[in-house]
Amino acid sequence: MKITVLGSGTSQGVPVIACNCPVCESNNPKDNRKRTSILIEDKGKTLVVDTGPDFRQQMLDAKVQNLDAVLFTHEHKDHVAGLDDIRAFNFKSRKDMDVYAVPRVQEALKREFEYVFAENKYPGVPQVNLIEIGEEPMQIEGIEIIPIDVMHYKLPVKAFRIGNFAYVTDTNYIAPSEMEKLKGLDVLILTALRIEKHISHFNLEEAIEVIQELKPKKAYLTHISHLLGKHKDVEEILPSNIGLCYDGLEISLNQ
Image (tube, rainbow, N blue to C red; front, side):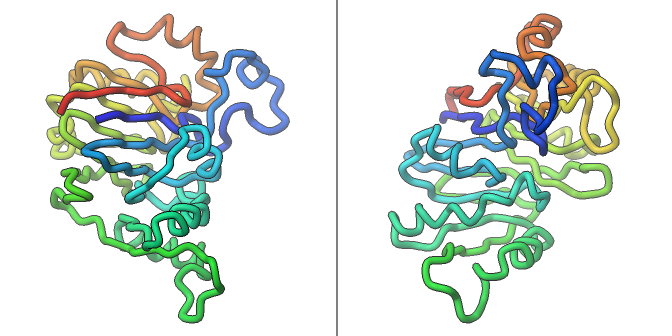
């Protein structure tokens, strides 16, 4: 299985519009962060978690030729805004795109992309097959995925575990019962927004505490704000088994 980090930035991305801070003016490509998303390649199939505003460019950057399904963590704009661009895959595969989401997120997609779900559709709109994410493990194209419930302040968000890998974004609380589902990992990707405490995301200190409790072999931090600091500077202070995600990072795992 291969995981590609398509985007590692928070909702504004990095650089932030009209910001002149050292991070936003950095010449290091690793300080340029599109909105958070990952690509999963396993068993000859390709899945994406979240289609944010940068989805089109992310697909071009990663040279994705085929996409079998999309999974949504939650309905915030920085995670769903690029859904329209699945049209290219509809045209190529000549089939609807399987889109996995909890019922609340499905309703949000229907509001946000009303034209996609209209009874009388405009020619060429995305073709979507909505599939519900429940509480039990599910099979997507032969890949077993375990949904995990986390909280983004007061909003429930889905995290996902596939074998010995897990992806957890947009959270500041994971219940003990859900933490159990995240133990025994080889690789964990976890949100860490900034240095200071935040109302709906783990900050750096909190993320490190969660990682130290879960004890994955390797962890990467994502959904990063310009307020976390420069990539190079932050990596120098992290424990040896923790790194920062950057756009284009590839992680290979044996399942």
